[in-house]
Amino acid sequence: MAPEPIRVLIVDDHPVVRDGLRGMFDRTEDVDVVGEASDGREAVDRALALGPDVILMDLRMPGTDGVSAIRELAALRVPAKVLVLTTYDTDSDVLPAIEAGAAGYLLKDASPQELRRAIRAAHEGGTVLAPSVASVLMDRVRRPAAAGPLSDRELEVLALIAKGRSNRETAAELFISEATVKTHLVHVYAKLEVNDRAAAVAAAYERGLLQPKGR
Image 1 (cartoon, rainbow, N blue to C red):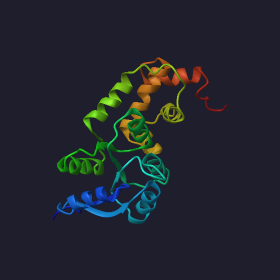
Image 2: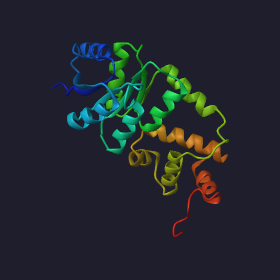
Image 3: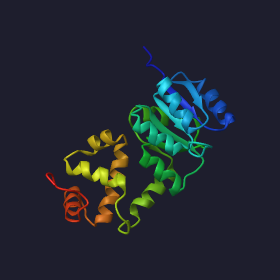
Image 4: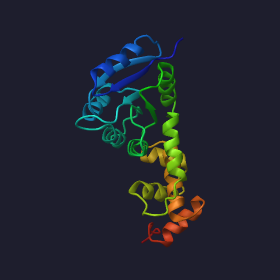
């Protein structure tokens, strides 16, 4: 018996892009396009109404953008995996999308085969990144980060780690991917000038970034 097709919601402000993706998936048996949206606000509404497995999300759209939609979907605990599909691969596009909880990031020059593989991988809990996007993330991780305070999200991750949560548990509690948790921890280590979780927690208590229980 063949498995159920993966239910996909397409979000893009260009009708020709939506039509092209729908036409491509109409020729496959393992993907079922259940709906479309033209901006982030509509994407959230359609996701709540249709319950897709995977959302193909453009980033730069009039009105509510893709990153804002990804954050709202996470806040609403929508279980669909968000796979970014855009033409932009700069720091200012990639990092906010991944930090918001995107399960993957592809560019619109991806082949139909790559896109279908990415949808399957995202549906199964994996993370898929275009090569240029992976390079952006690696460059950011390697870049010295000691200058600057911990972000709110980095503090949230560190607080959960201090409570003994694993990366998987932290990801589940914050509705982000394990890969995103690892990226946050790399930044935390660099900013606190430490090499592991225990040292990061100790340094955070010492600097007053975390409060011991009972205070």
